[in-house]
Image (tube, rainbow, N blue to C red):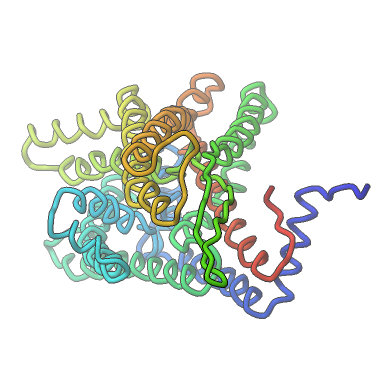
Length: 440
């Protein structure tokens, strides 16, 4: 009996097979080229930045570390792309929340491909003012930290400020455009690939800084072991699913006679069907109060200034309340996103239209109720898992005393999710050409 090759060997062989196909080779090279462009833009700084002060501020601020993840490391250089795709993600969150509650948007969303195009267009329009507002707030925050100066609309600073703000907004829209090009002409989801590229690029520096600061200490060893276990758990939960058996029966007319054909299949319902989206949504919302509060920290009014500082400290990653709200938001967004996506699929209705049924369950409404119960039970496990992943940096800090972790566990989940999703898409392309896949 021939011994089965390891997954890593099958992966390398499949990538080699993909490069032998002209269209797949173009997709892979195009994706890589767009990542190179992204990394180039991430190193074009805004003029007038004090690099030494910027490094010191990053060492003292976990909030900036989180924002740097979404900017793909561009914020650490205060480049023109330092906002990353975060304003687009915020706009997507807002549209996700508005579509179910606004009848007009709900009607547009039901119009198939045209509706999805319109919703995507509205999301792009909303991204622009959000990018302008966040860009100005980010500059004010960094000016308060002494990283940059001359930000404001008085004493001749208006024109340079507008130039910097519009440059940051343009950088965001450029990254969104690159992401959509990757989705259209490359492999994988473009926006996720952009975030993935930034996280992977920042990992070596993060590991080196942690090692230089801690050395081979017990805390560093424990951190490494926890990281390996977290990576294993993320892969297991990401791939875990429950198979719902489905029977198909169809009537075919041949030679004037009717024949019945039967077949069987299954519907895979994943425990973590929401993927990394709830984490991105939750962290994005949790940093908004700190960003908004930074606008008013230096207000002339003492009351406004003190209230802004209280909000900023309350929603700082160093506080217990921040992590409690993060956990709750992750759980809520997991249920919300999973149920919204599940309802949009109309699995029970599609099964009935295609002559399929779940053994022991009547078609129609009973099938829908049954699948709703199953997905709710699975989502409980998925929501708790994502909540614990969100809290992992807090637990690691308490156990090891290492505080400069940013959103390490969430970053791992994003990396694993993007890699698996890209691998599935590449596998699907290979299977269409009758190549053996590398995901089992």
